[in-house]
Length: 312
Image 1 (cartoon, rainbow, N blue to C red):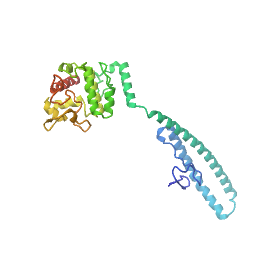
Image 2 (spheres, rainbow, N blue to C red):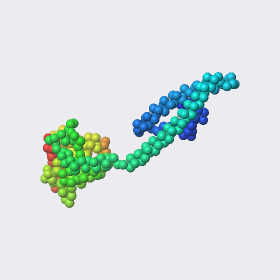
Image 3 (tube, helix red, strand yellow):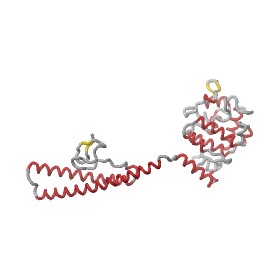
Image 4 (cartoon, rainbow, N blue to C red):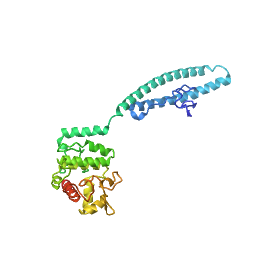
């Protein structure tokens, strides 16, 4: 049970609109956090509530005195009572108006929220990135300038492509935590960027000639959406720490466990996987096989060497 803020009369929330004793409007106000209008209304209502409480106490005192004396109140009290009734009528009118204002405000909030609900803000951001890249070609990553996405002083970075690759789907998959599909999408995009879709694998020459802008873009989206857990950047750091030892590298990133080379479907497609576990570029079936005419070690070595050259 709730109590009326003026006269403390108990009432059931949601079942009573006005206090049965003092007539106070018991409909809860709109959430003030949505707008300045709501905040201003609550401040005004607080002042009115303080005044109403004082008048109610005074009114009760006069009513009790009249009940004990069983007579009309003195002239001065009658004047006070008349003023009190007038003030109550005025307050009631103000509260009725405030109630209508509150209903209007709530209807406006409902209208705004109904139209915001279906909006995909992530997709909107991606579209803005694409438009910015088209109208601002200088936004293409250049590791010799402050557009370095890994620099603490860099400007806003937009993942772009120098060969017409669209990274929206990859970003969407990563944002939803669909790590396996994102890894497969990354492999497909790298084949497309190298014009090797028909062959289905990348040669060492293809890796060395891979578009720098696209390699940086792929790494950025992986690192961004995995909070630094995945991507070429973290893989290259691990590669340096093991001094280019491929077997040790696979042990560190979790592609090899207790001496066993994992199959692709055995990888841990989640954020609790070891750092650098994804993307698994350079092999498709097992990290000890490779793809096409190139071993996994040759692919990974070439890829990370290229990435390191772009960073230096």
